[in-house]
Amino acid sequence: MAKHKIYTMSFASVYPHYIKKAERKGRTKSEVDEIIRWLTGYNQEEIEAQLEKETDFETFIADAPEMNDSRHLIKGVICGVRVEEIEEPTMQEIRYLDKLIDELAKGKKMEKILRQA
Image (cartoon, rainbow, N blue to C red; front, side, top):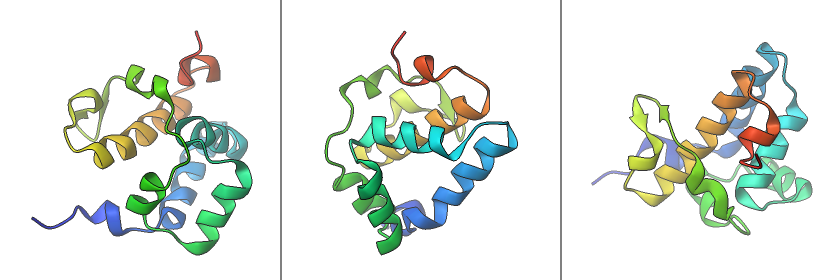
């Protein structure tokens, strides 16, 4: 079975879309970065290095220092699919990130997005 296209896309090619989506709704790049750090365990320098290397999305997720244990609290629909029902682990991690960025763009407070309250 062929890999989904998103796996081979560079994280650097998708990242500007996350920023643009957030900024269109009055949110910031720093908030997007905070979400990425929270979910993946990368620090800011590591994120920048991954962007510079143009790491593919599958590797970006696989090499994440420590995926947040609270990520399983992320629920809802993204791309017409419930994130909690996605069976393929890497795709689920990618869709968790998509869902968090979507919540940011919809105006949710960061404490709620980061499952702190």
